[in-house]
Image (cartoon, rainbow, N blue to C red):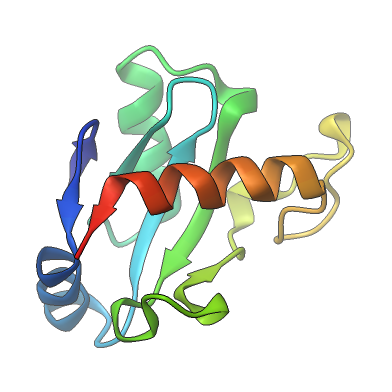
Length: 114
């Protein structure tokens, strides 16, 4: 598990996927700081790492990355139990707010390098 502040290569993500789930890497993105944690079996572990690192919980959103789908809409999947937040108006495992989804997408696109 690691915090990505600058970039992570697509090949590194592919290796992580292969060693853990086969085709996906779990990630948690901090939309306030523009960073993400990757490489854990559970989004909650990545969330805990970012919280320890000083990230505010309301800015953390769980996603799955599919390295083989890089460059397509299927690369990022908005699906995590940590996203269920009725107090923030998010009642699903997805990310319901379009602005938050756009922020997550922008950060992931900046941090993942071919």
